[in-house]
Image 1: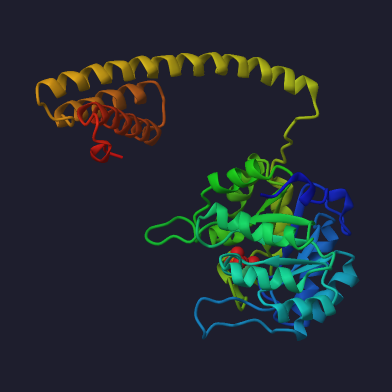
Image 2: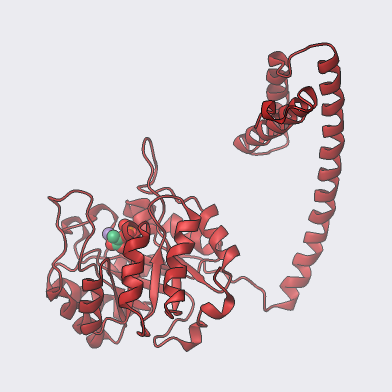
Length: 370
Ligand code: PEP
Ligand code: MN
């Protein structure tokens, strides 16, 4: 498991990493002029930490634009030198790593379609052994926290300790608001597991739609994420990849000005004091809730024993329907979120059935439900 010492503190990185860490630039480098124009506009704002451009593009279908390839590395580097903003690109093979290092790209990122594959990640981590380049690891396309952690570990184990993670959402099918489901609980769990690792958010690839970027960016900030990666293009509608989600540099700068930046507040004793008072009240309520749940479970067990001795079914459908209806109505009156109350009741019902099943099937563990 990754340890605190495996992550180099941000003030020891070769590039500036102040909060908020904003990465911007086109989805793909298309022409030297497009890269330079984007960079110059972004640089004028003074708000951009890292200039991005995709050189090799992992596209879903083979007919799409696959990126310009190695020749575009010098366009990115020139734009970076001209503006003084360090640059980053995505690498997916050891050949990409060799080309990117030759071109002196400052930071490399691992795309979602690469971090899903331990062989590819290992190949890249091996190609980077002995190099001091920072690496940003996007989440794998599927919502698998262990796979994301594993990818990060493969770099740390090879001595690549200047690491950040980047949340870009997870593949989903069917009806959807976003191109990729945010599933915020996964980046939160990552941060809880590796607190020294800063997590960034990529609202462009989460939303797939420039109109939705600002609200997702704000949510990422509200959750304490360290920065954002946002795709920018001088004429987004004409972009050769991801046109619908790219925004102009001017629109991005305006959006950055409107976002409400938040601070964890850990260094401020006043905030800590007030939060501690409110949390003490929460602690007391949690204690009561657990006491009640324990008492409720005792009753569930008594009912289980009664059902057992009278050969009654555990599931009593009418009663379950009644619980759902009455508690949902009460929850609504009490201004509790409807889906929260439903999920809570389902969880409670499942746990109760399991308890009663244990009583009914004493001595026969195989028949216990769930
Ligand atoms: C990208 O950043 O251009 C990209 C390909 O992203 P992802 O790996 O998140 O799909
Ligand atoms: Mn893209």
